[in-house]
Amino acid sequence: MPMNDPVLQQSYAAAVPELSVPWQADVPPAPELVWLNEDLAAELGYDAAWLCGPEGMALLTGQLDAAGKPLIPGSDAPERPFTTAQAYAGHQFGSANPQLGDGRAVLLGDLVDTLGDRRDLHLKGAGATPFARAGDGKAPLGPMLREAVVGESLHALGIPTTRALAVLTTGEQIAPRQGVTPEPGALLVRAAASHLRVGTLEHAAWHHDLGVRRALLDHVIERHHPTAEGAESPPLALLEAVMRSQAELTAQWMLVGFVHGVMNTDNMALSGEGIDYGPCAFLDVHRHGAVFSSIDRGGRYAYGNQPGIALWNLSRCAETLLELVDEEDPNVAVEQATAVLEGYEGHVLAAYARGLAAKLGIPVATGPARGGGSPPDGEGAAATGAGPGPDPLPSIRELGADLFALLEEQQVDHTGFFRALTDGDPSALFRDPAPFEVWHGRLLALRGTGPSADASEEAMARTNPVHIPRNMHLDAALRAAHRGDLEPARTLLEAVRRPFEHRAEHAHLEGPGDGGDLFMTFCGT
Ligand code: AMP
Ligand code: MG
Image (cartoon, rainbow, N blue to C red; front, side):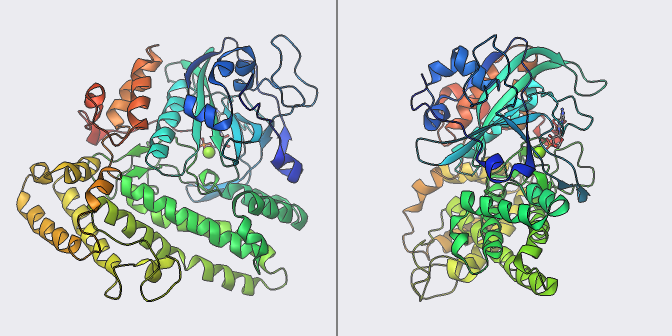
């Protein structure tokens, strides 16, 4: 039995039936569990041993009856499936695509976890759905493991993300593209605050009437940003909440050197969680223009472009809400939505500077803003030195910009630098340490101005990871998995789930490995 016997529901389909279709996952020929996230299982209320048994496997492979209970093996699929495939649209590499959707995935349902939060369970690789377009509906093992590793890593780093509950192989061999060596077919079961995306709002705005769009708005607000409900303008309050959560998320990605790789609007969740890790990667050497995705030829989703792209996506999000903001006067709606989005830059810069301060060991109080009782909010108010005095965040950002220019110029590893700064002296990482020494003097001066100059070392060790999924190690683990050896992927998962500790058994995974600078990923969709 599951521990709490979580009850799966289809809250989204119940609230907005127009935006999904009931759809049954294919029956995989010979499913095998490759990796089970036992911590997450417990958090969701599932017993790990139960998940490994026949009922659990039915759940993990999407074989549910009409009420959302695991199908007994051998019994018929329900006439009307419980599980659903969601419709969405999106802007892909800047171009509108009116019809996307869960082409190879079904929403198993949503449940209330042991913490009291509502979470979706979603199954990727479930076979072609009505939204598959030309796709085969399959998912190869490598990309599913990559998504699991990246999600666990980001989660352990404290960054909002969807997470893998399980990775399974289906028993099939699949070839996603011509000329690609066949690879084991796989399933990924992931948990997410929801699967509502900017692209979901776009689909509603482009294909549905105001009634459907209002129902969707209400559902998104209820589920993710309930304080918007009582606001003077709920759609504007939702936009504000989505804007803030994306500003926070993007700032955190920048700080750990994460490149999402395909920040299309259909890959931007309204919950503020990172989602859909395809051709993503972490920086080795710090490089503003770093692009790892073979499909991103123009570098649209380069590391340094991410904050600007998030705002571009938020503008598409705002457009979908205009009629809900002011049905009569589009000019008023545009003006009001623009005013909300004008707050983005301040939020992203403030979140970035606060995070940078923690990484650099510069104490910045997080209490009420200087000279007033308002909570940290936006650029000005977030600057919180001890009492009155100049706002420290701009100088922190300037120090950061100079550091990153130096790292790029001398080809220094992003993660390695911050950890060396935490553990001791990073000057050995520089070919010419002189400019670093000058920079370090400025850092020491800034550290000295804060409220508690020596309390920050421990905080640095909890902010600057030892372990991220290094591109070369992840790539090697995925290649081993392709050959049937899953041990390296499991070891990497263990390493990134405890990112802040040096451990002898994971020491070989700490550095970038050989050839990281030239790394490219072809793990697209
Ligand atoms: P992604 O690039 O993974 O975010 O996916 C973009 C769109 O393509 C989504 O609508 C996916 O559901 C769809 N898609 C990706 N791979 C497949 C596939 N193998 N079969 C069907 N649809 C797919
Ligand atoms: Mg996607």
